[in-house]
Length: 341
Image (tube, rainbow, N blue to C red; front, side, top):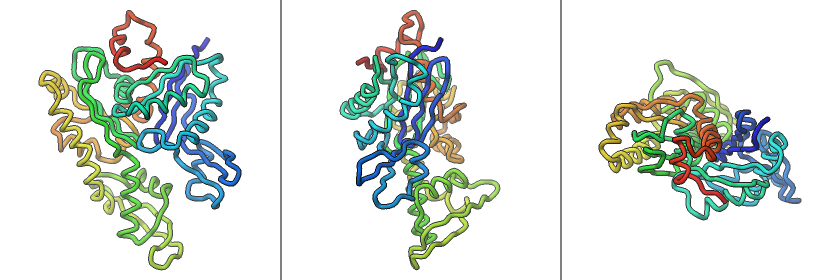
């Protein structure tokens, strides 16, 4: 008999839904396509994602979240409702829902997330900060009197946090993450290759040949787009050696936030972090060589978590499952990390 606990990682790029005892039951791009003439929803999730950059004028395919928060409330609500409807029948009744939010989320942004969860029929709504959930999902024992540092790089936000005794000691959240890398590739292709490409092609380049350090073996990838000089279709071959130098500002912004967090961290916790290293989670952390580059800049080893893109939703599922277990040592962080509506 499954419980009706649901945890949701509502990411800028992807939405993941986790049901207790059943695991991840939904993993869909956070994209919705709408007919602007009739205001009817054409598609959501994977089907809508296929339409990005390929729609006629009367069809709009968009990400209703930007920088980790809801930017278009109406479209986001409809997208969430339709995606959750796919899994709600598997739990029955009115579920308890845990929503993940960036550590620097404002009250207004948090309220939008809570309202969206309420609209889909949640019984109780809880909110957990993404770095806390990411740490739990990565297997960190954050309830101990021991320092644990997380860098969670998603699509729209990067969260850097130090935790101890179940709470966040120091944190920073910046609206620079995987989407920034994609934008840099689009700018590079226009500037250096004289080729205008879309987000889908840029994502392909990022995942195939993207990186922040030079690879031992060069990798090539073909890109198609519109020539900015002639206006005609054109294809070019891009090398991994072309891209690794364009992300210096991206790396700098993240390492600066990491330095700020470490500078504000108490010395005893700093010692723990130096001993254990820094845990990196989120799809943005998969950019080739990023963990090595940050480790070199900071002087602390950086580890990539297992199931790196699923840590947040799995961690929030662990937390939601322990909410009523007051004898469990993890109850300490319930008071600090969750808001019950």
